[in-house]
Image 1 (spheres, rainbow, N blue to C red):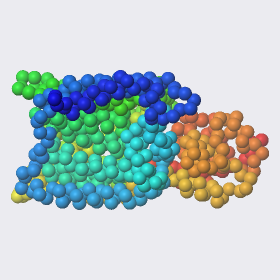
Image 2 (image 1 turned 180 degrees about the horizontal axis):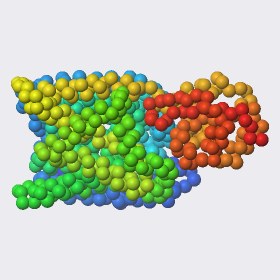
Image 3 (image 1 turned 90 degrees about the horizontal axis):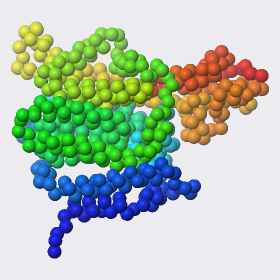
Image 4 (image 1 turned 90 degrees about the vertical axis):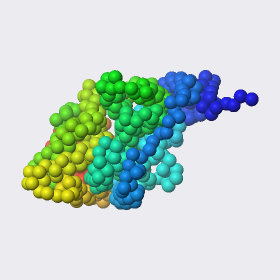
Length: 556
């Protein structure tokens, strides 16, 4: 009897599912819609079925190929003299990171976390994977947070738990990535710096996909560098899977993978005369990554290319690259005073870039090319250039700072003609001081990201019985959906004036004034003229203070 290989069975199952399961049945398996199935969901199901057939055919075609028989990975530092110390030291680093990120995990949510919670995480699984009504939907994070709720119950810490795990995982990923492109010492020091990084702690306690994007960026970059240097085709299969999961976490991962592809093309051209047995395998890896990404998004592709992908952004200043640059620079000065630390940091970064450019230019490509692609696409689409869009690059930034510190140490010893038997010691001291400065600043990452709850308590304890409380913009969603209050949402100027008529006093609670000035300029003019800011409630989100205002003036 002919023996059937597992890949043949698997491939045939995928093809059969794609051919014989109807689109309507597929949608009904995922979610029940009593009013009928929308056409965009049926189209998404058809795309999903097409993807199943293509993947099944690919498994049948390539599953038996001899190229997959090579070993996948061997730790290049396994035979180092200090190799036995790696595991305990890395364990201590990761345990410290976990402890720091669990502390204060239950503090107040900010707007995007609340939107994620209310619109996606609380929904059934089938609704999560078939709903893309906003770019606030980060699918893999929503799925993980939903699972966390099922395991631990609904709470703020359970909502943020996947971010904590992604954060700790990204520190581990940085270490292995660092050992591939830098020295073991630089990899360790970079991981330690990330443990105490204000921004890394903040995003590790942020129930959004950005910290997951960092994790998958580091893992795919590590596999990418290994794949280019090692004759191991299985690496590219793993690369494709990880890249697709990263894209499912945050769609900008696609742009990072495009950056990798550009570097591969240049590498291919540079090595065109070399004997490179598997030089076409990376291209297959990129194709498979694209196919898997298509499959993960297929159910919602019709929604993505409808109104969602072109949703308007109205705050002009948030689209300005100069504003983004200043926000990033201002963020690096958290806990530091004056221009001197900023100049010092720029100098260290420049030394690291210069050294990597000479010795390992692929690192510079991995750092800069995806940043440039993300910025270019965001500008071309008229999107907001939030600094968080570039958080994925922090790992490479830290490695470059580590290299710059070592280079500075060597320059100082040469200039001062200091003889030392430990050539890495001066640079290590420099980097240790940087870690200390980051550790001092890290405490500012804790606290509510936006203090909606304190603002609520203040208003409820100070307003009189016949006072009216208004909300505008994002605060309306937060206080109505999340807190279940009956505060009144302001829709337009006429609605605003009619609500205020014949009232003794009116309160209004708002946040993100830059956005409101662009969206509701007439209303904000009245707020400035007739209302007094009673109190501001600050959080760790820059620009996310909650304003509580009160007016004795009636519009009647």
